[in-house]
Structures are given as structure tokens and as C-alpha cells.
Length: 357
Image (tube, rainbow, N blue to C red):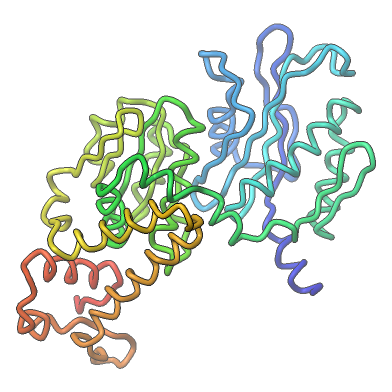
């Protein structure tokens, strides 16, 4: 038990404070421990206080070079001891994806800062969570790290909502994820982008891999360079200009217009056939069943996915070095699958690193 708690507490990387003063200036005020200049610049960019459109986003999250960031922003009420500050943001950085965990903890830290006007109390609570996985305070609420299971965070989005929006076209997203393609999602509202993108990895539940998620990306050279180092990803943008950057995506989702576009260079790998129609029908049927919960829909899709992966088994053999299974393409060709199915299975083998290169 202690080991599990210790493992959990090792996930937090840092805490920071950004303030907007009565003159409208936004400043990075404090952090513990220290942070790097590129990460600080990124967090200031993500924090809505630096945004010119003045919209307040209570909570945003994303990932940058394997560091998750969670930013909670509040307006300072007149009753607070913070007389020269109009708004502030608490920034938490961590190694794990768990928006619910970090937004809950940040809200407690916000209440502390509003009451005491000094980061000292926040630092004490941060260290308590870092070392013991718990912080307790009567007036600000208690926080227990182990209440927030990673699996719960993975299941927090709604697959049913995605299917009700895109219907049979959801299979394009499933195929792109199976093949580890690059998916870009656009919507002018960051909350819509985050809700949609965080749910997508559940379409390939057998991998349980949320490291592919980059839910809040700006068209900034450093961020794009970091993104393009990832072989496949889901990236969320609020700037429509991203639609004219085909170098960034294989599949483009315009969430505002409910449109999915496959980039010309990805069309060959993403050719749809009878198998995709079957998968699409299963996804829609399962999601439209009012008796089924989101996690049951994910389970149905996962069973179908495993069945597809097991299709590769008869055409696989142990590689020469005995290290892994590789696809025997001749055996696959002998089966005379429809061209789209054969093409998909070949690209799937490539995504699963089963090709002898």
C-alpha cells in the first residue's frame, strides 16, 4: 500500500502561480521547485490571463514534451486579502494524465491563496501531497491522491457523444488511431476541444495510451516541433489556421462544423472497405443502445479491435532474432482478402511494429 502511494506521489513535478494585477499586467510570480524558461513561456501562453480575448477558462490541460500541465484560473473577489490582484492561475505539472485529480487539488490551493495571500500555505500542501499523497484542511477541503484512479480519468469522456456527432464516420477516427496516424481537432472553444480529444484514445482501449494526447496546442514553432517528434498523436487547436497546415495531420476534425477530412497523403493507408463498414456499424449500434454505458461501448469496440488484431496472428512468424512477431506478407497475400482489408491489415502490422524492415 505504502509503495503504491509512493509511486502515485512521484507523479507531480511542480506547482506555479501566475497573477494578473490591477494594471492588467500578467506575471509569473512563484513556482516550486524551479522550472525551465521554455516551460514557463509555454504555461504563460496556455494561461487564459495572457489571452487578448479576455475569456476566462477555469481549467485547461495539455501535454508538452512528456510533461502534463493543468491550469486553474480564478477571479479574485473583493473580500480577498489579495488587493492588487484581479485574477490568478495555479499551474500544476505532472507525469500523468488525470485532469480530475489535478483540478480538484488546484481548487484547494486556490482557496488557500485567496485566504492567505501567500504561496507558503500552498507549498506546504503541495509537499504534503508529494510526500504523503494527502492534504487535509478543514476550511479548504481535503485531497487524497489515491481517490483518483488513472482508469477513471481514461473513462471520463463520452464515446456516445462522439458517435452521436459523427455516426458512421467515427470509424475514420478508429482507423486513424489503430494505424497510429496524426489527428488534429479544431474548435474555437478550448473546453470543446479538450472534452473531445481526451475521449479519443478510448477507441483503442487495448493500448490504454494517453501519451498520444496533446489537447491544447498553439501554432508556435517550439510546440509544433515537439508535436512532430511524436509518431502518431491527437492534437487539439483553437486556431482555424491549423486547417491550412496539412503537414501536421493525416486526419483533420473540424468539430465546429462536424466534418472529418482525410489528408491526401493518408488516403491510401486509410482506404475504407467491408471490414471498416462492419466496425462502423458495430460502433454505431453499440453507442445508440440506450441500455449501454460509455464503458460498455468501449468494451464492445475493444473486443472488435482484439478480433482484428487476432486476424494478424495466422500471418505472423517469429523474427530471425527471435525477438518479436513479424508479418509474413506472402501468407497475407495468399488469403486473398478484399484489397482494402489486406491494405488495412498491412498498415496495422506496421503500426504494431510487426514489419521486418
